[in-house]
Length: 256
Image (cartoon, rainbow, N blue to C red):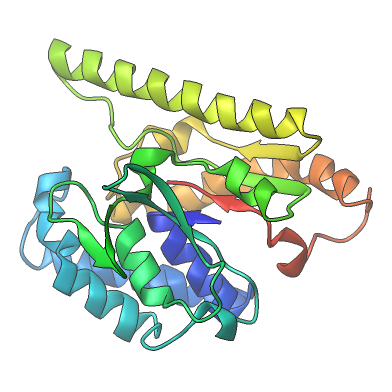
């Protein structure tokens, strides 16, 4: 289950498999994005510095060509994938992937449709970024049969900043995000679902477009995952055993 950037990462891993080679390729693509942006701007610190990257044409080219998702359907993926987006009318969360003939690329474009641009049309509806209806859709994974969910959180899309007004906005958005996430997690746990949340204050403190800090962010993510790995193995009935395969984690939730 992927949301926004989590939809991109999830689609890539479900298509290519979770190997060192595919992870290295994903890191290369992220660095190439930073390189392209740096060619035009010396300092990439805010959303507005990279707004052109989020245009529909740029995202379609990246998803279809660089990620190789053009013409790919959900049924053709080696591993099952679900992608969450926010529908405008009627408002609410929609999950792509239940239809095996659905387009993976269109689902990703809908899930990554940041609010600064026009909504993306997929089928007969219009969509915005999946994070607007919840960055960590644990309940959707549970509805689709996941009994153990590894929920990866990157925190609120709004980052802390200078100035009293911006700090107040950041705290309000952070608290709303945490409450909505907690409600989904606790609701799923009440239904008997094992939910293990991976989060890191160090990762959440960085900006959404801190591509130049990728190595540092990856290291923090690895450490945060190691903290929950024993509980994950126990939940899968493999205490002290090998790390779980990608197929065992197919109910996991990627949030951003």
